[in-house]
Every structure is written in C-alpha cells, then in structure tokens.
Image (cartoon, rainbow, N blue to C red):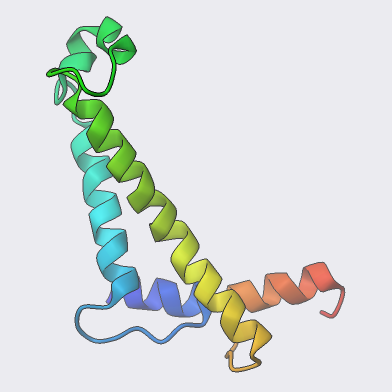
Length: 109
C-alpha cells in the first residue's frame, strides 16, 4: 500500500492491485540493497583486494551480483519516471510531483 501511494503521488501512475511491475522492481531493488548492506555478506568485505579480481574468477560472484543489482536499481528509478513522462506528454496525467516539477522547470507554474 505504501508503494502504491508513493508511485501515485510522485509519478501520477495507477498501480495494479497485484503484481505491479513498478512495485515488484522496487521490492527486488530494496531487497538487494538490504542483502548488500549486511557486513560480511561477501568475501570482499573481509578481503578488500578481491575487488580487483576479474568477474569470471570463482570468488568474484559479488561482482556479478553487483552488476545485476545495478540494473535493478536503474530500472527501479527510471521505469516509473519514464512512464510518468509519457503520461505528461500524452496529456493523460493527473496531479503529481513529477508534473509539478515539470511545469515549474518549464516556467508554467
């Protein structure tokens, strides 16, 4: 419910009651941040020199996960923003923080 409210107010988007792509992506992105924030989760926390090993090395799984999580983080931020922009351009948007900022920057507020 909190995610629906945030997406609605910030971007003016309607959120599906079940399996909404914006909410699902945000949940995955937040989960990855929670996992990465736990000290000692990855060997690189104990052995900092591991950050210099190539991605294909056996103990470099953290690098592969970081790349995957980076994509999730970008999608979590960019997908609703792009959808909100499309709604503004098509003039099918309701009041939102994105619309207010867009109008303010365009000098129409």
